[in-house]
Image 1: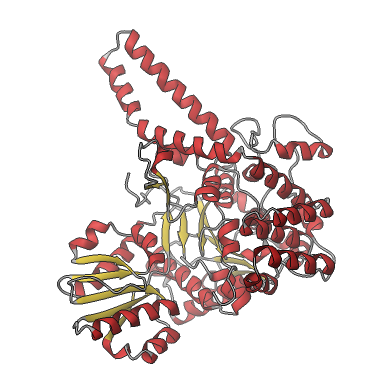
Image 2: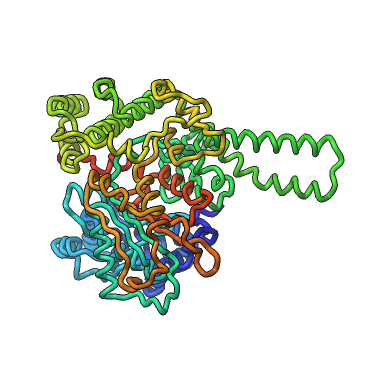
Length: 620
Protein backbone atom coordinates (compact mmCIF):
# COMPACT_ATOMS: atom_id res chain seq x y z
CA UNK A 1 0.00 0.00 0.00
CA UNK A 2 1.35 3.42 -0.96
CA UNK A 3 2.21 5.72 1.89
CA UNK A 4 0.87 8.73 -0.01
CA UNK A 5 -2.81 8.86 1.02
CA UNK A 6 -5.72 9.16 -1.38
CA UNK A 7 -7.16 12.64 -0.76
CA UNK A 8 -10.16 12.52 -3.08
CA UNK A 9 -12.77 10.97 -0.78
CA UNK A 10 -12.72 13.56 2.01
CA UNK A 11 -15.15 16.41 2.67
CA UNK A 12 -12.94 18.58 0.43
CA UNK A 13 -10.38 17.48 -2.15
CA UNK A 14 -6.88 18.37 -0.91
CA UNK A 15 -5.20 16.86 -3.99
CA UNK A 16 -4.58 20.28 -5.66
CA UNK A 17 -2.74 21.44 -2.49
CA UNK A 18 -0.45 18.40 -2.61
CA UNK A 19 0.01 18.62 -6.39
CA UNK A 20 1.04 22.28 -6.11
CA UNK A 21 3.70 21.44 -3.48
CA UNK A 22 4.98 18.54 -5.57
CA UNK A 23 5.19 20.77 -8.65
CA UNK A 24 7.12 23.45 -6.71
CA UNK A 25 9.63 20.89 -5.42
CA UNK A 26 10.18 19.29 -8.83
CA UNK A 27 10.61 22.76 -10.40
CA UNK A 28 13.46 23.43 -7.96
CA UNK A 29 15.15 20.18 -9.07
CA UNK A 30 14.51 20.80 -12.78
CA UNK A 31 16.11 24.25 -12.59
CA UNK A 32 19.34 22.70 -11.27
CA UNK A 33 20.40 20.72 -14.31
CA UNK A 34 22.05 17.33 -14.24
CA UNK A 35 22.82 15.04 -11.29
CA UNK A 36 22.51 16.63 -7.89
CA UNK A 37 22.86 15.57 -4.30
CA UNK A 38 19.60 16.41 -2.45
CA UNK A 39 20.41 16.75 1.27
CA UNK A 40 17.20 16.75 3.33
CA UNK A 41 16.64 17.99 6.87
CA UNK A 42 15.67 14.72 8.70
CA UNK A 43 12.54 16.41 10.09
CA UNK A 44 11.35 17.09 6.55
CA UNK A 45 11.81 13.51 5.34
CA UNK A 46 8.40 12.31 6.54
CA UNK A 47 6.64 15.42 5.19
CA UNK A 48 8.17 15.00 1.73
CA UNK A 49 7.15 11.33 1.63
CA UNK A 50 3.50 12.53 1.72
CA UNK A 51 4.05 14.81 -1.29
CA UNK A 52 6.25 12.89 -3.69
CA UNK A 53 7.52 9.34 -4.21
CA UNK A 54 11.29 8.83 -3.80
CA UNK A 55 11.41 7.33 -7.31
CA UNK A 56 10.16 10.62 -8.80
CA UNK A 57 12.93 12.58 -7.06
CA UNK A 58 15.48 10.14 -8.45
CA UNK A 59 14.00 10.54 -11.95
CA UNK A 60 14.83 14.24 -11.64
CA UNK A 61 18.50 13.46 -11.01
CA UNK A 62 18.42 13.60 -7.19
CA UNK A 63 20.69 11.42 -5.08
CA UNK A 64 19.15 11.46 -1.58
CA UNK A 65 20.97 12.11 1.70
CA UNK A 66 19.86 13.11 5.21
CA UNK A 67 21.50 16.19 6.67
CA UNK A 68 23.81 15.59 9.65
CA UNK A 69 27.28 16.59 10.82
CA UNK A 70 29.05 14.03 8.59
CA UNK A 71 30.57 15.31 5.31
CA UNK A 72 28.70 14.53 2.06
CA UNK A 73 30.14 11.47 0.36
CA UNK A 74 29.04 11.86 -3.26
CA UNK A 75 30.45 12.28 -6.73
CA UNK A 76 27.83 14.98 -7.51
CA UNK A 77 29.15 18.47 -8.17
CA UNK A 78 25.85 20.09 -7.19
CA UNK A 79 24.54 19.93 -3.62
CA UNK A 80 20.99 21.04 -2.81
CA UNK A 81 20.02 21.50 0.85
CA UNK A 82 16.32 21.41 1.77
CA UNK A 83 16.04 22.63 5.36
CA UNK A 84 13.87 24.24 8.01
CA UNK A 85 15.12 27.49 9.52
CA UNK A 86 17.12 25.98 12.41
CA UNK A 87 20.51 27.44 13.36
CA UNK A 88 22.17 24.09 14.14
CA UNK A 89 21.44 22.99 10.55
CA UNK A 90 23.30 26.05 9.24
CA UNK A 91 26.34 24.86 11.19
CA UNK A 92 26.13 21.44 9.47
CA UNK A 93 25.95 23.12 6.03
CA UNK A 94 28.89 25.40 6.84
CA UNK A 95 31.04 22.48 8.04
CA UNK A 96 30.23 20.54 4.83
CA UNK A 97 31.38 23.45 2.67
CA UNK A 98 34.54 24.02 4.75
CA UNK A 99 35.31 20.31 4.53
CA UNK A 100 34.91 20.32 0.71
CA UNK A 101 37.10 23.44 0.41
CA UNK A 102 39.85 21.88 2.52
CA UNK A 103 39.86 18.86 0.19
CA UNK A 104 39.91 21.02 -2.94
CA UNK A 105 36.44 19.83 -4.03
CA UNK A 106 34.64 22.27 -6.30
CA UNK A 107 30.86 22.15 -5.94
CA UNK A 108 27.83 24.36 -6.46
CA UNK A 109 25.72 24.76 -3.31
CA UNK A 110 22.01 25.56 -3.09
CA UNK A 111 20.00 26.10 0.10
CA UNK A 112 16.20 26.04 -0.05
CA UNK A 113 14.51 27.10 3.18
CA UNK A 114 11.15 25.56 4.14
CA UNK A 115 8.79 27.38 4.11
CA UNK A 116 10.75 30.69 3.86
CA UNK A 117 14.20 32.12 4.49
CA UNK A 118 15.17 33.58 7.87
CA UNK A 119 17.53 36.47 8.62
CA UNK A 120 19.13 34.70 11.62
CA UNK A 121 20.05 31.66 9.49
CA UNK A 122 21.58 33.77 6.71
CA UNK A 123 23.52 35.82 9.27
CA UNK A 124 25.07 32.64 10.67
CA UNK A 125 26.03 31.53 7.13
CA UNK A 126 27.66 34.94 6.62
CA UNK A 127 29.56 34.61 9.92
CA UNK A 128 30.80 31.22 8.78
CA UNK A 129 32.00 32.86 5.51
CA UNK A 130 29.98 30.54 3.25
CA UNK A 131 26.97 32.73 2.37
CA UNK A 132 28.60 34.02 -0.84
CA UNK A 133 29.12 30.41 -2.03
CA UNK A 134 25.40 29.61 -1.79
CA UNK A 135 22.42 30.13 -4.04
CA UNK A 136 19.49 30.67 -1.66
CA UNK A 137 15.81 30.06 -2.35
CA UNK A 138 12.54 28.98 -0.70
CA UNK A 139 10.28 25.94 -0.90
CA UNK A 140 6.97 27.41 0.37
CA UNK A 141 5.53 24.30 2.06
CA UNK A 142 3.16 26.09 4.46
CA UNK A 143 0.51 23.40 4.64
CA UNK A 144 0.70 19.62 4.17
CA UNK A 145 -2.29 17.25 3.74
CA UNK A 146 -1.72 14.30 6.12
CA UNK A 147 -4.99 12.60 5.20
CA UNK A 148 -8.28 13.39 3.52
CA UNK A 149 -9.50 15.57 6.42
CA UNK A 150 -6.24 16.62 8.16
CA UNK A 151 -3.81 19.41 7.27
CA UNK A 152 -0.54 20.05 9.11
CA UNK A 153 1.51 23.25 9.18
CA UNK A 154 4.47 21.08 10.30
CA UNK A 155 5.45 23.41 13.17
CA UNK A 156 6.29 20.94 15.91
CA UNK A 157 7.88 23.52 18.26
CA UNK A 158 5.24 26.22 17.78
CA UNK A 159 3.66 25.89 21.25
CA UNK A 160 6.97 25.97 23.14
CA UNK A 161 8.33 28.82 20.98
CA UNK A 162 5.25 30.98 21.68
CA UNK A 163 4.95 30.24 25.40
CA UNK A 164 8.54 30.06 26.64
CA UNK A 165 10.70 31.71 23.98
CA UNK A 166 8.36 34.56 23.06
CA UNK A 167 8.93 33.67 19.38
CA UNK A 168 5.69 34.09 17.42
CA UNK A 169 7.12 33.50 13.92
CA UNK A 170 5.04 30.32 13.64
CA UNK A 171 1.79 32.35 13.90
CA UNK A 172 2.63 34.15 10.65
CA UNK A 173 3.28 30.77 9.01
CA UNK A 174 -0.13 29.48 10.18
CA UNK A 175 -1.93 32.56 8.83
CA UNK A 176 -0.02 32.25 5.56
CA UNK A 177 -0.99 28.56 5.30
CA UNK A 178 -4.69 29.33 5.86
CA UNK A 179 -4.55 32.21 3.36
CA UNK A 180 -2.95 29.87 0.83
CA UNK A 181 -5.91 27.51 1.32
CA UNK A 182 -8.28 30.40 0.63
CA UNK A 183 -6.73 30.90 -2.81
CA UNK A 184 -7.78 27.31 -3.63
CA UNK A 185 -11.14 27.08 -1.83
CA UNK A 186 -12.38 30.67 -1.49
CA UNK A 187 -12.40 33.33 1.24
CA UNK A 188 -13.73 31.86 4.51
CA UNK A 189 -16.75 34.00 5.55
CA UNK A 190 -16.85 33.35 9.33
CA UNK A 191 -13.94 33.29 11.78
CA UNK A 192 -14.04 32.36 15.47
CA UNK A 193 -10.85 32.42 17.55
CA UNK A 194 -10.13 31.74 21.22
CA UNK A 195 -6.75 32.31 22.84
CA UNK A 196 -4.01 34.91 22.47
CA UNK A 197 -2.24 33.19 19.57
CA UNK A 198 -5.49 32.33 17.75
CA UNK A 199 -6.79 35.92 17.89
CA UNK A 200 -3.43 37.11 16.48
CA UNK A 201 -3.67 34.61 13.62
CA UNK A 202 -7.22 35.83 12.85
CA UNK A 203 -5.91 39.43 12.74
CA UNK A 204 -2.97 38.45 10.50
CA UNK A 205 -5.37 36.65 8.16
CA UNK A 206 -7.42 39.82 7.74
CA UNK A 207 -4.24 41.84 7.08
CA UNK A 208 -3.09 39.31 4.47
CA UNK A 209 -6.50 39.51 2.79
CA UNK A 210 -6.18 43.32 2.67
CA UNK A 211 -2.65 43.14 1.20
CA UNK A 212 -3.12 40.16 -1.12
CA UNK A 213 -6.88 39.69 -1.57
CA UNK A 214 -8.59 36.44 -2.49
CA UNK A 215 -11.05 37.55 -5.15
CA UNK A 216 -14.43 36.04 -4.26
CA UNK A 217 -15.64 36.40 -7.87
CA UNK A 218 -12.73 34.21 -9.07
CA UNK A 219 -13.30 31.41 -6.53
CA UNK A 220 -17.12 31.49 -6.48
CA UNK A 221 -19.03 30.28 -3.42
CA UNK A 222 -16.47 29.58 -0.67
CA UNK A 223 -16.08 25.86 0.03
CA UNK A 224 -15.20 26.44 3.70
CA UNK A 225 -17.96 28.27 5.59
CA UNK A 226 -16.35 28.76 9.01
CA UNK A 227 -12.86 28.83 10.51
CA UNK A 228 -12.48 28.04 14.23
CA UNK A 229 -9.00 28.66 15.70
CA UNK A 230 -8.06 27.41 19.17
CA UNK A 231 -4.91 27.74 21.28
CA UNK A 232 -3.65 24.47 22.74
CA UNK A 233 -3.13 26.47 25.95
CA UNK A 234 -6.94 26.49 26.46
CA UNK A 235 -6.93 22.75 27.03
CA UNK A 236 -3.76 21.14 28.29
CA UNK A 237 -5.76 18.48 30.12
CA UNK A 238 -6.70 16.55 26.97
CA UNK A 239 -3.21 15.89 25.54
CA UNK A 240 -1.92 14.80 28.96
CA UNK A 241 -4.58 12.05 29.21
CA UNK A 242 -3.94 8.65 27.59
CA UNK A 243 -5.88 8.32 24.35
CA UNK A 244 -8.08 5.23 24.12
CA UNK A 245 -9.00 5.14 20.44
CA UNK A 246 -7.18 2.69 18.16
CA UNK A 247 -5.19 5.37 16.33
CA UNK A 248 -4.63 7.34 19.54
CA UNK A 249 -3.27 4.33 21.43
CA UNK A 250 -1.04 3.48 18.49
CA UNK A 251 0.40 7.00 18.63
CA UNK A 252 0.86 6.79 22.43
CA UNK A 253 2.87 3.55 22.23
CA UNK A 254 4.37 3.42 18.72
CA UNK A 255 4.37 7.12 17.68
CA UNK A 256 2.74 7.71 14.31
CA UNK A 257 4.90 10.00 12.21
CA UNK A 258 3.48 11.49 9.01
CA UNK A 259 0.95 8.71 8.53
CA UNK A 260 3.19 5.73 9.34
CA UNK A 261 4.65 3.80 12.29
CA UNK A 262 8.10 2.23 12.34
CA UNK A 263 8.14 -0.98 14.37
CA UNK A 264 10.08 -4.21 14.82
CA UNK A 265 9.34 -6.53 11.90
CA UNK A 266 8.76 -9.34 14.42
CA UNK A 267 5.58 -7.56 15.67
CA UNK A 268 4.16 -7.85 12.16
CA UNK A 269 4.80 -11.59 12.06
CA UNK A 270 8.14 -11.51 10.20
CA UNK A 271 10.70 -14.12 11.24
CA UNK A 272 13.66 -11.76 11.56
CA UNK A 273 15.49 -11.88 14.87
CA UNK A 274 17.89 -9.01 14.18
CA UNK A 275 15.56 -6.24 15.37
CA UNK A 276 14.94 -5.08 11.80
CA UNK A 277 12.41 -2.25 11.54
CA UNK A 278 9.58 -1.93 9.07
CA UNK A 279 7.36 1.01 8.16
CA UNK A 280 3.60 0.45 8.34
CA UNK A 281 1.51 3.13 6.55
CA UNK A 282 -1.64 4.24 8.38
CA UNK A 283 -4.11 6.36 6.46
CA UNK A 284 -7.60 6.21 4.99
CA UNK A 285 -6.38 4.38 1.87
CA UNK A 286 -6.35 1.30 4.13
CA UNK A 287 -10.09 0.50 4.26
CA UNK A 288 -9.95 -1.51 7.48
CA UNK A 289 -7.97 1.22 9.24
CA UNK A 290 -10.45 3.82 7.98
CA UNK A 291 -13.24 1.75 9.56
CA UNK A 292 -11.51 1.19 12.92
CA UNK A 293 -9.12 4.11 13.55
CA UNK A 294 -11.64 6.23 15.48
CA UNK A 295 -13.18 3.42 17.56
CA UNK A 296 -12.39 2.76 21.18
CA UNK A 297 -9.69 0.07 21.19
CA UNK A 298 -11.81 -2.58 22.88
CA UNK A 299 -14.38 -2.26 20.10
CA UNK A 300 -11.61 -2.62 17.49
CA UNK A 301 -10.58 -5.96 19.04
CA UNK A 302 -14.21 -7.12 18.67
CA UNK A 303 -14.45 -5.92 15.06
CA UNK A 304 -11.24 -7.75 14.08
CA UNK A 305 -12.42 -10.90 15.86
CA UNK A 306 -15.76 -10.81 13.99
CA UNK A 307 -14.07 -10.29 10.62
CA UNK A 308 -11.60 -13.13 11.23
CA UNK A 309 -14.43 -15.47 12.31
CA UNK A 310 -16.48 -14.53 9.22
CA UNK A 311 -13.52 -15.23 6.92
CA UNK A 312 -12.90 -18.56 8.62
CA UNK A 313 -16.56 -19.57 8.11
CA UNK A 314 -16.38 -18.56 4.44
CA UNK A 315 -13.28 -20.71 4.02
CA UNK A 316 -14.98 -23.69 5.69
CA UNK A 317 -17.97 -23.32 3.35
CA UNK A 318 -15.63 -23.15 0.37
CA UNK A 319 -13.97 -26.44 1.24
CA UNK A 320 -17.10 -28.37 2.25
CA UNK A 321 -19.75 -27.30 -0.31
CA UNK A 322 -19.98 -26.79 -4.05
CA UNK A 323 -19.76 -23.09 -4.87
CA UNK A 324 -21.02 -21.23 -7.92
CA UNK A 325 -18.57 -19.12 -9.94
CA UNK A 326 -20.19 -15.98 -8.51
CA UNK A 327 -19.66 -17.23 -4.93
CA UNK A 328 -16.04 -18.10 -5.72
CA UNK A 329 -15.53 -14.59 -7.06
CA UNK A 330 -16.94 -13.06 -3.84
CA UNK A 331 -14.65 -15.22 -1.73
CA UNK A 332 -11.56 -14.22 -3.72
CA UNK A 333 -12.59 -10.57 -3.29
CA UNK A 334 -12.67 -11.08 0.49
CA UNK A 335 -9.21 -12.68 0.37
CA UNK A 336 -7.85 -9.40 -1.06
CA UNK A 337 -8.43 -7.81 2.34
CA UNK A 338 -6.40 -10.51 4.12
CA UNK A 339 -3.12 -8.51 4.20
CA UNK A 340 -4.94 -5.57 5.87
CA UNK A 341 -6.58 -7.97 8.35
CA UNK A 342 -3.25 -9.59 9.22
CA UNK A 343 -1.58 -6.20 9.64
CA UNK A 344 -4.19 -4.91 12.08
CA UNK A 345 -4.50 -8.16 14.03
CA UNK A 346 -0.73 -8.04 14.61
CA UNK A 347 -0.86 -4.37 15.66
CA UNK A 348 -3.90 -4.91 17.92
CA UNK A 349 -2.26 -7.92 19.57
CA UNK A 350 0.85 -5.85 20.32
CA UNK A 351 -1.24 -2.97 21.73
CA UNK A 352 -3.27 -5.40 23.88
CA UNK A 353 -0.04 -6.58 25.53
CA UNK A 354 0.96 -3.00 26.31
CA UNK A 355 -2.46 -1.82 27.57
CA UNK A 356 -2.84 -4.75 29.96
CA UNK A 357 0.32 -3.84 31.91
CA UNK A 358 -0.33 -2.73 35.53
CA UNK A 359 1.81 0.39 35.00
CA UNK A 360 -0.47 1.60 32.18
CA UNK A 361 -3.68 0.73 34.06
CA UNK A 362 -2.43 2.47 37.20
CA UNK A 363 -1.52 5.60 35.28
CA UNK A 364 -4.91 5.59 33.54
CA UNK A 365 -6.66 5.32 36.90
CA UNK A 366 -4.63 8.25 38.23
CA UNK A 367 -5.42 10.39 35.15
CA UNK A 368 -9.15 9.86 35.73
CA UNK A 369 -8.79 10.74 39.44
CA UNK A 370 -6.96 13.99 38.57
CA UNK A 371 -9.53 14.93 35.90
CA UNK A 372 -12.32 14.34 38.44
CA UNK A 373 -10.64 17.01 40.56
CA UNK A 374 -10.62 14.81 43.64
CA UNK A 375 -8.03 13.35 46.03
CA UNK A 376 -5.20 15.84 45.41
CA UNK A 377 -2.98 14.29 48.11
CA UNK A 378 -3.33 10.76 46.67
CA UNK A 379 -2.40 12.06 43.19
CA UNK A 380 0.61 13.99 44.50
CA UNK A 381 1.86 10.93 46.43
CA UNK A 382 1.47 8.78 43.30
CA UNK A 383 3.70 11.16 41.31
CA UNK A 384 6.18 11.24 44.19
CA UNK A 385 6.31 7.44 44.14
CA UNK A 386 6.89 7.47 40.34
CA UNK A 387 9.91 9.71 40.90
CA UNK A 388 11.32 7.41 43.59
CA UNK A 389 10.85 4.41 41.28
CA UNK A 390 12.74 6.32 38.56
CA UNK A 391 9.89 5.87 36.07
CA UNK A 392 10.46 7.50 32.65
CA UNK A 393 10.91 11.23 33.18
CA UNK A 394 8.38 12.16 30.50
CA UNK A 395 5.68 10.04 32.23
CA UNK A 396 6.31 11.85 35.52
CA UNK A 397 6.14 15.29 33.87
CA UNK A 398 2.97 14.37 32.01
CA UNK A 399 1.04 13.55 35.19
CA UNK A 400 2.59 16.51 37.00
CA UNK A 401 1.38 18.88 34.24
CA UNK A 402 -2.11 17.34 34.45
CA UNK A 403 -2.20 17.82 38.24
CA UNK A 404 -0.87 21.39 38.02
CA UNK A 405 -3.21 22.48 35.21
CA UNK A 406 -6.36 21.14 36.93
CA UNK A 407 -5.39 22.78 40.25
CA UNK A 408 -4.20 26.18 38.92
CA UNK A 409 -0.70 25.15 40.02
CA UNK A 410 0.80 23.35 43.00
CA UNK A 411 0.88 24.74 46.57
CA UNK A 412 4.32 26.36 47.13
CA UNK A 413 5.40 23.65 49.60
CA UNK A 414 4.57 20.87 47.08
CA UNK A 415 6.02 22.84 44.15
CA UNK A 416 9.42 23.35 45.79
CA UNK A 417 9.52 19.79 47.14
CA UNK A 418 8.65 18.05 43.84
CA UNK A 419 11.22 20.11 41.90
CA UNK A 420 13.89 19.15 44.44
CA UNK A 421 12.92 15.45 44.21
CA UNK A 422 13.01 15.52 40.38
CA UNK A 423 16.46 17.11 40.27
CA UNK A 424 17.84 14.65 42.82
CA UNK A 425 16.41 11.64 40.97
CA UNK A 426 16.89 12.60 37.33
CA UNK A 427 19.81 15.03 37.47
CA UNK A 428 20.30 18.76 37.98
CA UNK A 429 20.66 19.28 34.21
CA UNK A 430 16.83 19.07 34.03
CA UNK A 431 16.47 22.46 35.75
CA UNK A 432 16.09 24.00 32.25
CA UNK A 433 13.09 21.75 31.54
CA UNK A 434 11.41 22.65 34.84
CA UNK A 435 12.00 26.35 34.14
CA UNK A 436 10.46 26.00 30.66
CA UNK A 437 7.36 24.31 32.14
CA UNK A 438 7.04 27.02 34.80
CA UNK A 439 7.40 29.81 32.24
CA UNK A 440 4.71 28.17 30.08
CA UNK A 441 2.42 27.97 33.11
CA UNK A 442 2.26 24.17 32.94
CA UNK A 443 3.93 23.34 36.27
CA UNK A 444 3.79 26.41 38.48
CA UNK A 445 3.15 27.67 42.01
CA UNK A 446 -0.51 27.97 42.92
CA UNK A 447 -1.57 31.62 43.00
CA UNK A 448 -5.35 31.40 43.17
CA UNK A 449 -8.35 29.12 43.17
CA UNK A 450 -8.72 26.63 40.32
CA UNK A 451 -11.58 27.07 37.83
CA UNK A 452 -11.35 23.45 36.68
CA UNK A 453 -14.37 22.10 38.61
CA UNK A 454 -16.56 24.97 37.36
CA UNK A 455 -15.47 24.41 33.74
CA UNK A 456 -15.83 20.63 34.09
CA UNK A 457 -19.42 20.92 35.35
CA UNK A 458 -20.53 23.69 32.96
CA UNK A 459 -19.27 21.87 29.86
CA UNK A 460 -20.11 18.34 31.13
CA UNK A 461 -16.56 17.15 30.60
CA UNK A 462 -16.94 14.02 32.71
CA UNK A 463 -19.72 11.78 31.43
CA UNK A 464 -20.38 9.16 34.06
CA UNK A 465 -22.64 6.71 32.23
CA UNK A 466 -20.16 5.60 29.60
CA UNK A 467 -20.49 1.83 29.71
CA UNK A 468 -23.29 -0.69 29.57
CA UNK A 469 -23.97 -0.77 33.32
CA UNK A 470 -25.43 2.19 35.18
CA UNK A 471 -22.68 2.96 37.69
CA UNK A 472 -23.13 5.90 40.01
CA UNK A 473 -20.43 8.51 40.49
CA UNK A 474 -19.39 6.87 43.78
CA UNK A 475 -18.45 3.75 41.87
CA UNK A 476 -16.33 5.57 39.31
CA UNK A 477 -12.91 4.65 40.78
CA UNK A 478 -13.79 1.01 40.16
CA UNK A 479 -14.88 1.85 36.61
CA UNK A 480 -11.56 3.53 35.89
CA UNK A 481 -9.53 0.40 36.46
CA UNK A 482 -11.69 -1.34 33.90
CA UNK A 483 -11.02 1.44 31.43
CA UNK A 484 -8.94 -0.66 29.13
CA UNK A 485 -11.66 -3.14 28.79
CA UNK A 486 -11.88 -0.03 27.40
CA UNK A 487 -15.34 1.43 27.26
CA UNK A 488 -18.01 -0.19 25.23
CA UNK A 489 -20.86 2.29 25.27
CA UNK A 490 -23.77 0.29 23.91
CA UNK A 491 -21.09 -1.79 22.14
CA UNK A 492 -20.16 0.02 18.89
CA UNK A 493 -22.56 2.95 19.31
CA UNK A 494 -21.15 5.74 21.47
CA UNK A 495 -23.56 8.58 22.19
CA UNK A 496 -20.99 11.24 23.10
CA UNK A 497 -17.44 12.30 22.26
CA UNK A 498 -16.36 11.19 25.77
CA UNK A 499 -15.85 7.65 24.40
CA UNK A 500 -12.37 8.68 23.14
CA UNK A 501 -11.12 8.93 26.74
CA UNK A 502 -13.54 6.47 28.39
CA UNK A 503 -15.71 9.02 30.11
CA UNK A 504 -13.83 12.34 29.66
CA UNK A 505 -15.08 14.66 26.89
CA UNK A 506 -12.17 16.83 25.66
CA UNK A 507 -12.60 20.48 26.65
CA UNK A 508 -11.39 21.55 23.19
CA UNK A 509 -14.14 19.49 21.51
CA UNK A 510 -16.86 20.84 23.80
CA UNK A 511 -15.81 24.39 22.79
CA UNK A 512 -16.00 23.41 19.11
CA UNK A 513 -19.42 21.79 19.62
CA UNK A 514 -20.75 25.06 21.04
CA UNK A 515 -19.03 27.18 18.39
CA UNK A 516 -20.68 25.18 15.61
CA UNK A 517 -24.13 24.72 17.11
CA UNK A 518 -24.97 27.96 18.87
CA UNK A 519 -21.94 30.21 18.80
CA UNK A 520 -19.91 31.21 21.85
CA UNK A 521 -22.24 33.93 23.15
CA UNK A 522 -24.05 31.59 25.59
CA UNK A 523 -20.60 30.51 26.86
CA UNK A 524 -19.24 34.00 27.60
CA UNK A 525 -18.78 33.39 31.34
CA UNK A 526 -16.97 30.07 30.82
CA UNK A 527 -14.75 31.48 28.07
CA UNK A 528 -13.60 34.18 30.50
CA UNK A 529 -12.25 31.44 32.79
CA UNK A 530 -9.99 30.12 29.99
CA UNK A 531 -6.72 31.79 28.92
CA UNK A 532 -6.75 34.56 26.31
CA UNK A 533 -9.38 36.66 24.58
CA UNK A 534 -11.89 35.44 21.99
CA UNK A 535 -13.34 36.89 18.84
CA UNK A 536 -16.18 36.11 16.42
CA UNK A 537 -16.31 37.95 13.12
CA UNK A 538 -17.66 37.90 9.62
CA UNK A 539 -15.08 38.75 6.94
CA UNK A 540 -15.63 42.13 5.30
CA UNK A 541 -16.52 40.68 1.88
CA UNK A 542 -19.51 38.91 3.48
CA UNK A 543 -20.49 41.55 6.05
CA UNK A 544 -23.85 42.25 4.40
CA UNK A 545 -24.61 38.70 3.29
CA UNK A 546 -26.94 36.88 5.71
CA UNK A 547 -26.65 33.63 3.72
CA UNK A 548 -23.18 33.14 5.22
CA UNK A 549 -24.33 33.49 8.83
CA UNK A 550 -23.92 30.54 11.14
CA UNK A 551 -25.56 32.13 14.17
CA UNK A 552 -27.57 31.29 16.11
CA UNK A 553 -28.11 27.62 15.17
CA UNK A 554 -25.63 26.03 12.80
CA UNK A 555 -27.65 22.83 12.71
CA UNK A 556 -30.29 24.25 10.42
CA UNK A 557 -28.04 25.79 7.83
CA UNK A 558 -28.77 24.93 4.20
CA UNK A 559 -26.37 22.79 2.22
CA UNK A 560 -24.10 24.42 -0.31
CA UNK A 561 -25.19 24.52 -3.92
CA UNK A 562 -24.15 21.04 -5.06
CA UNK A 563 -25.85 19.31 -2.12
CA UNK A 564 -22.75 18.80 0.04
CA UNK A 565 -22.78 19.84 3.68
CA UNK A 566 -21.15 23.13 4.68
CA UNK A 567 -17.55 22.87 5.85
CA UNK A 568 -15.90 23.96 9.10
CA UNK A 569 -12.10 24.18 9.33
CA UNK A 570 -10.87 23.76 12.92
CA UNK A 571 -7.27 24.88 13.48
CA UNK A 572 -5.31 23.94 16.63
CA UNK A 573 -2.32 26.16 17.42
CA UNK A 574 0.06 24.00 19.45
CA UNK A 575 -1.07 20.61 18.16
CA UNK A 576 -4.00 18.18 18.22
CA UNK A 577 -4.23 14.56 19.39
CA UNK A 578 -5.63 11.69 17.34
CA UNK A 579 -8.34 11.25 20.01
CA UNK A 580 -9.55 14.82 19.39
CA UNK A 581 -9.53 14.16 15.63
CA UNK A 582 -11.63 11.02 16.25
CA UNK A 583 -14.04 13.06 18.42
CA UNK A 584 -14.44 15.64 15.63
CA UNK A 585 -15.12 12.90 13.07
CA UNK A 586 -17.68 11.46 15.48
CA UNK A 587 -19.35 14.90 15.79
CA UNK A 588 -19.41 15.29 12.03
CA UNK A 589 -21.06 11.88 11.59
CA UNK A 590 -23.95 12.61 13.96
CA UNK A 591 -27.48 12.72 12.61
CA UNK A 592 -28.67 16.29 12.27
CA UNK A 593 -25.14 17.75 12.10
CA UNK A 594 -25.13 20.26 9.24
CA UNK A 595 -21.35 20.40 8.86
CA UNK A 596 -18.41 18.38 7.71
CA UNK A 597 -15.29 19.13 9.74
CA UNK A 598 -11.71 19.32 8.49
CA UNK A 599 -8.77 19.79 10.84
CA UNK A 600 -5.67 21.95 10.62
CA UNK A 601 -2.87 21.71 13.18
CA UNK A 602 0.67 22.86 13.82
CA UNK A 603 1.49 19.18 14.42
CA UNK A 604 -0.19 15.94 15.53
CA UNK A 605 0.82 15.51 19.17
CA UNK A 606 0.37 13.26 22.18
CA UNK A 607 1.22 13.91 25.83
CA UNK A 608 4.77 12.63 25.40
CA UNK A 609 5.68 14.58 22.26
CA UNK A 610 4.15 17.80 23.63
CA UNK A 611 5.98 17.42 26.96
CA UNK A 612 9.24 16.55 25.18
CA UNK A 613 9.07 19.81 23.21
CA UNK A 614 9.69 21.63 26.55
CA UNK A 615 12.50 19.29 27.63
CA UNK A 616 16.11 20.40 27.40
CA UNK A 617 19.20 19.63 29.40
CA UNK A 618 21.28 22.44 30.81
CA UNK A 619 24.29 22.81 28.54
CA UNK A 620 22.86 20.09 26.28
